Length: 385
Image (cartoon, rainbow, N blue to C red; front, side, top):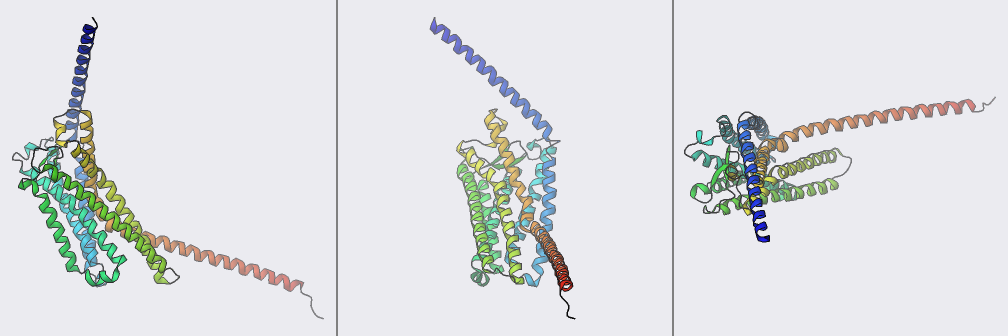
């Protein structure tokens, strides 16, 4: 009797579980259908906005770099200007090569097969995502190392850091990253469609493909390594600037200019570190988490588990944040620096003018008070007959 009752309870539990699984799966499928149907008309604005803003910002940065590079007084800054120009050019090409494909897929109703029946476009998109993802990170690291050397060891920097060396380093970075991105084409790793089907990237959950885990883990590790190098070098640069600013402290015009330049550079470096961490940390950490759990964003189209759907939605948000870095790069490295410098000069001039006016008013009041005291003394002074 107890056994029969247990069997009936177990059967009831299984039935309820199946009903709940069916309802959850049905709701997830309906949600996915609704999401997919609405993405074509709503979410297409996101890649369009990113492409336009990225093109405008990077084009302005390239124009400013070209103008500054041609000036004779900027000979010492040419290596840094080359790095910024290559970063802006990389981000611009990344936007031009990937955004039109994403927009086309949205316009096709999220059906990648309509624009890529052979699958070659997916591989091209994956190569672009990997190349234009790692290149800005390594270029940021190169610029951080360049600034750290210029501040901490200026004599060695002026003797050895020539523009020809900078060009060679930039070419090596580009070639190595491109060769790494082409590994899936050679059979090491795989590029697959990612949720919600509008882009292709590294597969993080398929261990059957030869070298796939190696390729995915290497991408995440290289990204984290470049972030750490950039942060470390920027901290070293900030420390060196503060030390040199203290040694140059004084009332001379050159010391005031150095203090102003130090403040401007420190603000810029802090902005660079914040932007890099906010834009890239979620994607790289989430990639490692999905690799360890053998989960890929490609599985969202087939698996209705709510926690996998959550990971896929986070992954889509993380890749959008990483793509946002291509838009912010020209502002934090160049355009924002110009604006900050001018604003700082305006504020400094206003404060100095106010101080001068206050000094004048105080001096006028003191002169008037001294005059009154002198007149009072003269009135009470006894006169000789």
